[in-house]
Image (cartoon, rainbow, N blue to C red; front, side, top):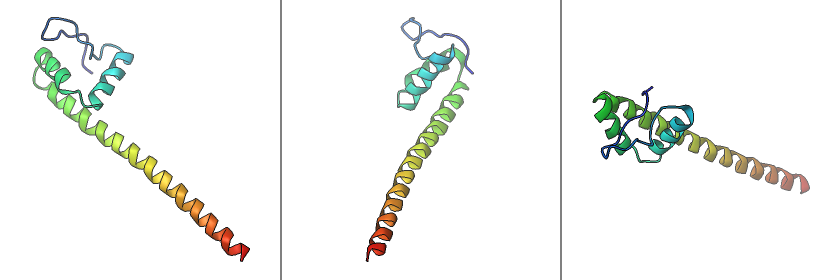
Length: 96
């Protein structure tokens, strides 16, 4: 991963680093919620243009993962609703 702490354009220490695990999780969360351009610029200024590949891959795969998670939750709820409706129809037929 990307090492150590980096400085921002203002000369302050950046809060979006991969220095340790909790900070890295926070950084990935920030990147996944749409605020990825500014941290990427900080890392490009510090480590060079190849860092863009890492950030773009993280955004693409992270959004793919979040989309799949969302779809899995939706499909599970649809399956539960269909199962409950089928059970209710079966009970209604048995009562007749």
